[in-house]
View 1 (cartoon, rainbow, N blue to C red):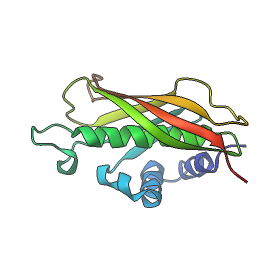
View 2: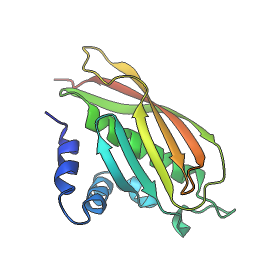
View 3: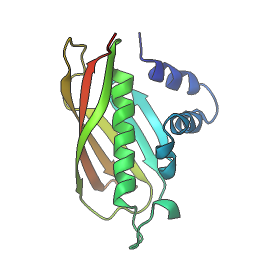
View 4: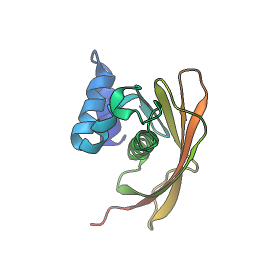
Length: 156
């Protein structure tokens, strides 16, 4: 049985503009992410890919994509990946993020989030590190994040 979020994503993939509709639905549920106008391009257990266009609202004073826009993209893709991968009866919350800015971010930015260890059901909570790498259109890595997620059983 797949996670409800993953079920919704798969259902919307059958429709024209399914990625756009799914991305809008995510931003409706979590409005803060609408500030970067993300597009989720792939969601499956253990992997989420998304992108943001380089537009004025995510541009900083030197003309590149703002560092916090990249952080938002990383947190969004990591959270969606974990949510889509969780066994039934488990929940998650981000607890911290370490980031590295590797190059100037210009143009469309493409993020890939993957877990650093298997996501499993457990009787006690556990730390789950998630790696997110962001590349530009040329394939240059411009940003990396390691997001500390806390995965725990749903309280009854």
